[in-house]
Image (cartoon, rainbow, N blue to C red; front, side, top):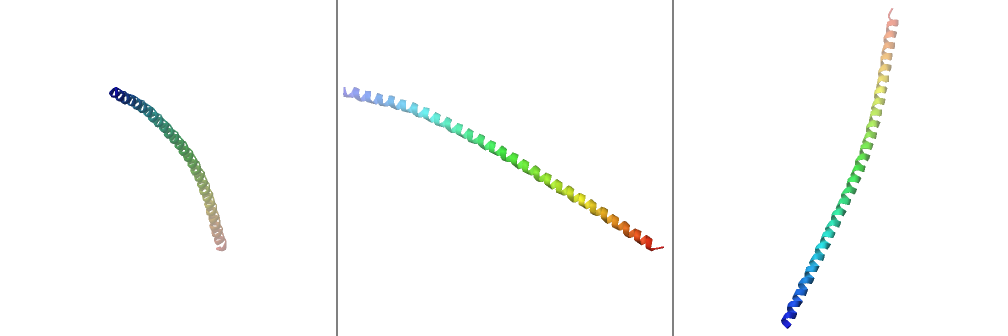
Length: 102
């Protein structure tokens, strides 16, 4: 009888251990799924943040390029005005030289 009680105890222990293993496996799957979902969310958040950072950098670069283009155009216009003034002064000097020589 003691032998049967011992065997019954071992069988109950094995069944309980089998149930724990199933629960452990289910819990591990759940935790794995949760960790995967969390990683996906973090990846999406990182991707969205990166997109926003790239858009901002692109916008700032365009603004900087527009500013540089405007400065270059201004410098070119100023240079053209200065060249025109220099030509006018040269013509005036030539005209004065022509007038002073009879």
